[in-house]
Length: 325
Ligand code: SAM
Ligand code: SF4
Image 1: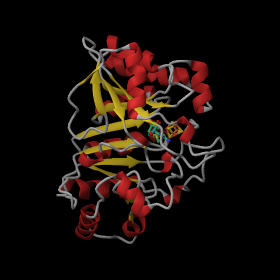
Image 2: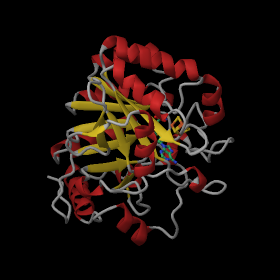
Image 3: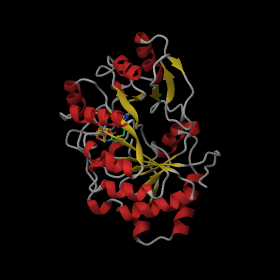
């Protein structure tokens, strides 16, 4: 079992399979992209599956594929097939553009939970935010997911002055559909002024929603959820707010992260993880790997504030695309 020094058990791996992406969201990446990893610097599928087997033996039962855009990784369904034989629960966070052609194949391998990132319901604004004209690609993925009844959560990064006038329109989607819409506090990103001008806090987001839906009410959170749950009475879908920057939910964290280059991180705010790629290429055995990870998880900090204080010089991130969001 992977227990940390605060008594929490780690059961969930966020696996970033690439740092590349077909979009260029302004809060995530500069227009020209970042210094992307070379192929030899990425964990191979074989290395990921070996690591996956060790983590499963240590009690991890859920894996979320993320990135970059996970569907940009070549032959991704092959990796999902392997992961499906190890883990009972597979999920993916995606912009959805590349999803429709592989959706049924991925379902067949056990991937049936999606977080779809969609920050606006307006095509022109989608282009403004992502620098790519792909609104209809993401929208089509949403329609296909709903048509198949696959569990879907829409992730909306709230950007002051850009999409904060659409929060009510997103909440209205929960009137017709049994889907969750989750608003994410924008986190600083080390480009330009670091996004601080875009930030709206949990309480400010809630106040904007309440302007249109005054009876929105707090409901029970899912276990280990990263969002605070609400519902408009009578609506089948739920609304969530992810306090990504204010970090009020860290106390129940059950996550571990793995970057595309094989760095294992206890926290989104970590900068000091363990570099597993060289160890895997030197042929580390299962037992030694399990011991190393167990020891690392034990030292996990109480929350993201503590991690930031102890591991970072400032409050900036290189890019969410190399950590996995
Ligand atoms: N490309 C996929 C996607 O966008 O869904 C997966 C990777 S993306 C880095 C994962 C999540 O992180 C997305 O929901 C994205 O909106 C979010 N994200 C990226 N940069 C962020 C930032 N600066 N603040 C808050 N959320 C961010
Ligand atoms: Fe790509 Fe996701 Fe980052 Fe947008 S948030 S640039 S879709 S990795």
